[in-house]
Image (cartoon, rainbow, N blue to C red; front, side):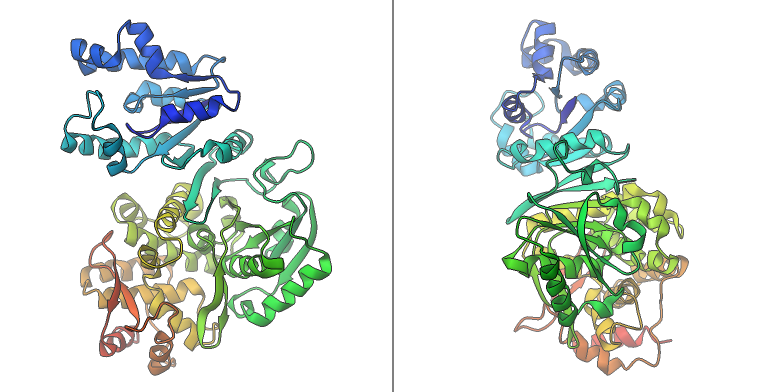
Length: 518
């Protein structure tokens, strides 16, 4: 059973209409409650009060959730407040889909209605904030409430959840130029997502064959768990492979393998593989679909989502690239267990970066993480992916809000560039860049927290004294987000409060880098 949950104004009734058009038996729990009460909900609410209504609602919904004839059930906005309902939703036969609506949109949709709990805007907004964590806690899938006729595209990916390992969750990533499902969970490699043939799935893009794009370290580990693959393109591991010459080599290999526009490229690996595979997919025959299968922590919490692809130049990181949204992202968290410890540690820099930007509960939880614990916290991988997808949804082309994701990367990328992409892993350079950014943010207390966290995780807190500060400063000026105004930094005075496009005096930047050399 597909169970629809969401706040008032999320469009659950409209979703029922769309799903009924696909031949499913759809039921609105509110109509069941009204039939049981013998009166409209608003009238019952006025006569008997909210407590009596909630008891009736709970009894009716728990009964409906056990009805094998119902294929889709839409729950009222407050139904998940009942522990009994939340427990019933845990049945493995149920897929809980949260139609997530922004608060302003919800209020605009229901303020003129006769809903008892939509009469005072302040109370409405307080209720919205109270219920959001409950929806999050029960959801197997999160879909945007405002996407037009979304079920025409999402019904297959949502149904696929029922064929995947327990614990798998789905994010519907949507932005101005496209949308795609993101699966996060254990055991996804070798799962039904990669099946083909007459009983295959409608999640994989294209009508042709799959081709694997990986590196020499990852391909031997997981290359045989992608279903039927017609050919494999393999690159050397590491950032030094992310070059125009390697892209040309890979593109020519794709041509020799006979890749066509109806085929798909499966990017199996970390951020480097994802970036260069996406770039090749974008440029090959003017564009073929790419499926991102991130296997490193950096890629699973950040780089696999959002469609940024590209290669490096000696002058700057990611200087040549294109936006090419993936058709699907498959994040198998089990791959982190085979990741070398130093790579897992480096990836923690992107985890703390995301937590700093998001603030709130994510910041509190990440701050308490112990070394290595992340491999058992798929919930945090999912939370980081959700944050990244929300930012991209608001600013896919990186013209405004998406710049927050550059926090710590301006100096971090400069360190990578100044050292020829050989001295530090990306995450290690970002860890140092975060400390520099917090110094520039005039947030000494927060910087000390991150400094202590870096030490505990095994991330660097000092810059190699042999590195030329002027070379790093020069590389900062090649930051790809530089405009005619200069290099805009992302500053963060408090967790969850990033400030973008901040111009900073060069001497201050120098001091922030010098502070890293003890």
